[in-house]
Length: 452
Ligand code: ADP
Figure 1 (cartoon, rainbow, N blue to C red):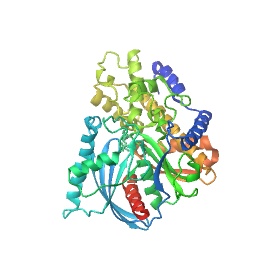
Figure 2: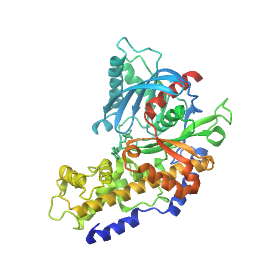
Figure 3: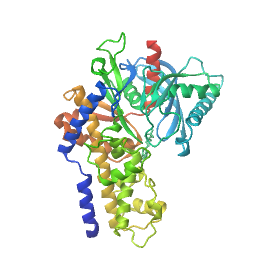
Figure 4: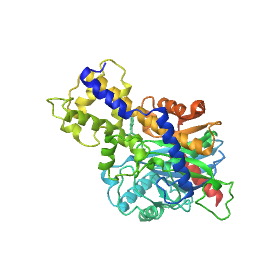
């Protein structure tokens, strides 16, 4: 049980962090309108970006492809062999990005990507990589395209800030770096991880209609008919043809902050981020931020003299030191003593905790995790409602460590879908999509080649 002196605090936090079913429905309604506005008018906060990925794969795409994936945390290079009939093989290497690499000059970042790609090719193709092998580049930041093999970065998200990239064609920048390192390949397709996840999942699961990322950031893609994308007219492209839309919906409710129940903690995170006012929805949901919500609440209680009296708290007072993975860890520990949590506080922050405090921490982690999962259901429900597939339902392919590793995340999200859509919510089923970006990228490269 939570001790009496913490109980009041806890009740206050319950009030601030709990989102009722009625509120979820209000948010979803506003979300649907926002999605539709983005499809009708260019330059909206939720930009609903046309991806130039036309239609779903058949499952019979074949061949050898290289996929490069610049996520929020890692750079991955994959060799994907598509074998048709929904079958594939992947070999991959991962390179961790340092915080410095996320801020240095854009040229240096793309040079690093090119170097990693060359190392990978030299290891996997000792006799030289085939020159005509398609290269898909999963670049998961809002990027405007008017062709599949080109993309202008609108703005960095997820803590990146490399100068010289916003407003420029990422494909051109990367191709320059590839030439510098004498790479035989050039970019065939620029792809968002959400689109890649949807397409990869569709290759093997034909009921997939949404690709969702819940990792460092949060975003989704789905397939829409050209006649719904009224802001876009393409010569020779029929109204019934379909194109994947990268919603970039982490930006929902940015700037005017009218719909989301933001707490003062969310506001602090927003204002101290490198991009204040942007990505409002993402900042309440994604892995980059959840630990920070928890840390800010603890720090407030330290200031009020409720926690860690007489202990030196400087270690936990540093922004972003409390990882979202720690919340997972606390939630996963169902023992009375909460020894994992005790160890965590001692090891990372030199802080001693009582068993009662640790129970409070666990309940607080739960509040933050449940809030994130419930809010993430609003975006999904909005797409389902926009498409008018409430009765049919669909599979949602989800990639990202938050979804994969946070205890009970999927269940919490499914409960909220029922709160929003009623019984129909049960027909919207999420599933972890492994290798989404790599395989999806390869399939899109294959579809692109076939279309040319
Ligand atoms: P990315 O989205 O950067 O491509 P991931 O899908 O691995 O990569 O997501 C990384 C994010 O997931 C980090 O921000 C981190 O906070 C979060 N994360 C990592 N491990 C866990 C975990 N065990 N529980 C919850 N969140 C986690």
